[in-house]
Image (cartoon, rainbow, N blue to C red; front, side, top):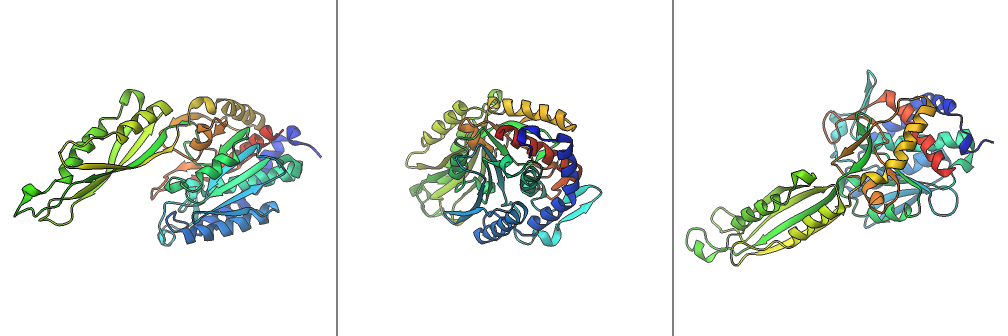
Length: 385
């Protein structure tokens, strides 16, 4: 039986095209189970069905790992540490009831539904690329492969990040099945940090004795400007105050106010600079106190980490006879930031081609599903050879 180094690439593309109707059936299946990240029971239901789907398609049951109440799946093939890790998530940003008005649909080559682009199509592509390798080259072709399907990516991967990093620790490649607007593979991503800056003051009656209060809201105004000034456009570092709140009643000097901060940075040095500055904020108004919550969430995914895998993707696309992938640097982060931050060769954006992540017009273009599934299969085999 042929090994992974003797794959018939033309047959792989044909197999992916032949599998498309079944892949669409599986995509409809996973979209039709709502899995908003903040509902852990819903995420667990989605994980249970995805686990059943994995066993049905691949003949192996994944491990179900519950970490701090969040359900994740891990399916390992062979023995020893993983040499290739496929990184997926099945939680979505969409609240319960979204399917009632945005159900799964296929029309004129476009697949729609909550999570269709981000990233349930990509997760199903992981399954079918693996299945195609088993069928074309035997079970030994996937010895060393690990498939992860996590449940909290959309809320920062707070319970799954260490699982992802541990699984990929000795890997030759981590392939991230996030989607791509325009089809470009993600060659680098900014690192992300998330903070809540809390201002503590002192309440007082706004009419009778406002001078006895210490106005947390006024201090908040100073600190929001100080934080925003940490941005560096030349280095593409963005530091953006976002949600803010404060006060209790219209006749009370606010004793507490807070604002959230979104930070994006291309390099670890920039991410650390901003972190240190936010953690060192000092009050402008005497008597106020500043409390900083949060910190660095995902490290930067720097371009040298993806360069070798991207070059192989271009070479393999030529052997498959499909369109060569393009590359792009993007500001948004993914679970690939964790593996890239640890120095593991990582290639991202291998999932659906379409548009509308987190938006009402979310969709995936069906024509790209087979060739990109074939490319993923070839990339897996290439690193397991």
